[in-house]
Image (cartoon, rainbow, N blue to C red):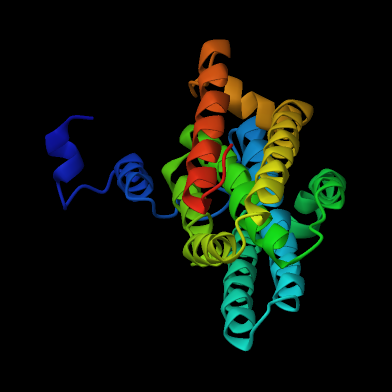
Length: 255
């Protein structure tokens, strides 16, 4: 279809409506939008299920971390971030329901690996919790944003919206830098903690990418959907590492 046909407001061509709607990041036609591509639909369900459980655990962790806050304003600030994460969870489960998928079933394959990551990286105090929320969650955010390059505009818009910083970055950077300024000795301990987090988070991302066939298929592509070759996969994980180094620098920590 040429550009003139796409811009014709009187056109009643269904494909034109769907194409323009999806290109704008809006919903495709009514019903299951991916019914004709079950492999891709399974990948989108996996992606949204993983994100939904990640947002749910982020809410519960941040709410718990708020209890360790040294002052009421800091407690309230972190609680607000936790509430925003829960709203992201609701948006993701709502989309899964729209697609005809059961959100609980979609999240189930990711419960054990995500819980395992958090069990292995349980912070021992307020500052470690902040570094984890900024650095550890940041790696997961970057990973899912990279994957979103291979989904349709409708799904990509949702993924980007739930991955937006809701204030946790500025809050964590300010609190950690102030703590280091007050006691420079904490910098070394937090730097080691950050290095541990990046190792665990990258391993977790790789496991998610290869152990779920649907997500792996999304990355490698399909008949009508280009994916990433091995070289691009390598560049993707290099970008994740570069972003980690940038975040550590913002905190005033060496990577």
